[in-house]
Image (cartoon, rainbow, N blue to C red; front, side):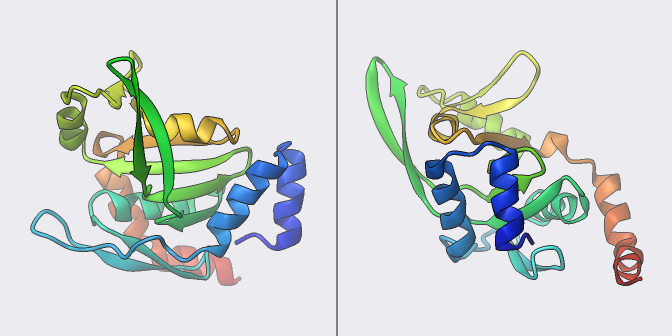
Length: 189
């Protein structure tokens, strides 16, 4: 996790505005916006993050926990926060502006950028893309988008990404889990 001075340097290096710094500070100082819950579709839990110095909630072992492993061991990820503060955003549907309240799964601070990440299964995204509002859609490169999240992030010069289960390599995650003790020993030396 970054110190206050390291975060200040990061903001200067990445040319972040005062309003963007305020959003990032709010994420870092707020508790998770909600507690994750299990149901018949998922198993939730907590991951003891050494990088963050506290536990990170997850709502799915196969998707969110896998994403957490990727964040924990990716040197490009400086910080990752679960269930960041809720925000309101807008999208246009049938020539009318509509509002939506969102709590994303994660907020990341990377070496060169920061923003929100929403994790969903490929099947769930395909179902959401069929809804008439079309706030979730897939571009020609095969990447998923969430229009209200992107609209909100854009005003702060931050990103909003949708991560699909199709982007998770289960073998990589199993290997990371298997090598976790090795990574810990390497950090201590």
